[in-house]
Length: 115
Length: 111
Image (cartoon, rainbow over all chains, first blue to last red; front, side, top):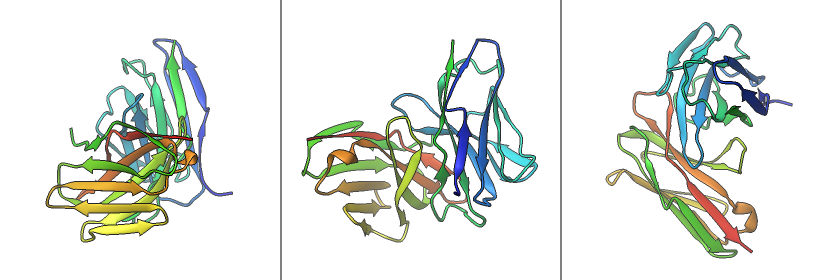
């Protein structure tokens, strides 16, 4: 069963704690993306990676970090430096040669709440 | 912000009516995509229209693109209760390999 999985579905964090969100894909896609979505808003790009061991900042990277050690995995760490982390986080991926020509494939999302 | 704008922000219609959502963007694009999001879920791709196309159909969906006005519209005909969702446009900016999303239209279909 191919697709993108995100875990956990719901995550609660105390202020000052780092937390890592998981994103895994078995689609053999090269590029992976992390987005943040606030209530009633569109998606904003946090980080993206087009190849293993390489990634680029998106529009709102401050307070977040990522790694891309494996093609299948692109975890996102929300650090204590992120002042307002409560949001819905979506991971996406695209096949080789995407260059914006086709859809991005999205995971089901993780809802992060800071207590 | 590079984000486009969508209009209206919310739309409520009766089942069977047509729903029209509009999207504007700011820079030259390669293509424009429309996605659907059910509450609390991921996004599902609906349709893609390339910058050299003016209109595209897929089932009950009709998308138009006017590059001179930097705008697109999504028409859902004969709406159903199951069409209740948020709809987002996303543009692929020329020279960039990322999507820029609009803020979305929240569509409610009343039975």
